Image (cartoon, rainbow, N blue to C red; front, side):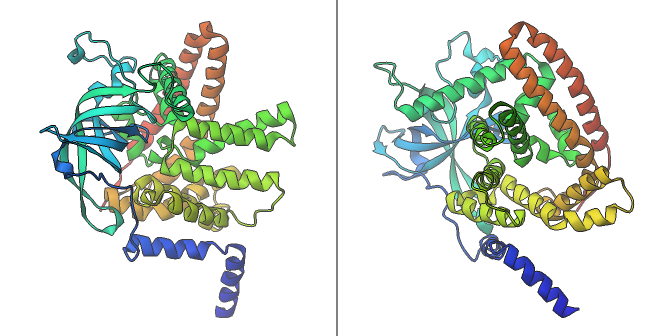
Length: 446
């Protein structure tokens, strides 16, 4: 028995040679044996606590955080800083900045704030913008890497500037800035279109761009209580839906030979529009491996090996992502599916029909690796999540496909947009009721 077991694992190791290095690296990093270099901290001629103003370039998508009185967190690559006394210094590194919602959402539809008193806003904060902030520095704890560190957060008091072009000639700073300006404007116009579709549009916005400001707190809590938080996070599910649709359209339009190239273009466009997040970047690496394997006729023996390669490459490029919750849940869920899907499916095959047992097996596999993470961060287990994910995921898949079709048709025939919005609203009503139903089931608090 021992000999057969050893031979089985030896054969698996030959098929997946990158798994062991990935597991060892994860063990060393999460245990604190190896230390990770995160983003460069703020460096200037005087301490961070004395900074009252700085300029730099936004290098991340603004993400809404529940704390700090409804603020948006952005990362800014610093150029220069200034103290209250007027001392000016060049600076380097990345600052973590919290922008009040009343300032960030000034262009967002339906987000009007009386504090502006009719003043015309002159800024659009997004990845790539050149900004000047008046800030208040605050000390905070950073628990990444298994050890507590002290870091400086900057809370914005006033936005003194936010530009995409050179002020003297109105020309974009460079081609990269021009591309990022187009992206920011595209996301803004997409937000306005989705706002016209009400609650359904808010869900589409969350699923396709990662922006959740138009999802009610009650709906977000229901997804979390039902064990369905992964559906709202941009991840492999969203990229695979977009990838599958692009491959189908490419095959019908350009033929099977050029379909992978069209699929590659489509997923890169989606990643560019949605923005980099740990879970979405993981999905991008895995998708690129599969697409290039198809283009160059390389046979993939095990997707677990692809996941291990993605983990090693991801930690090399963005090591700080390792301690993000989205990173751990994304890799843990997919690893659980790849490891336990087949054995669990064999057990479920005696009880459930073919299609149902596959969905339940994948959901159970994902839960197997993510339960320890949820226990550490949330102190709660959601057993109903196994059934909820298997039941709701097909509805969400169909919802995304219908939404994409309606978006394209709305752009071609704008006068039909209200009709599409009403149809999608009825679809969303069914989806919401299913989520709220599963959210009523009890959770286990540890």
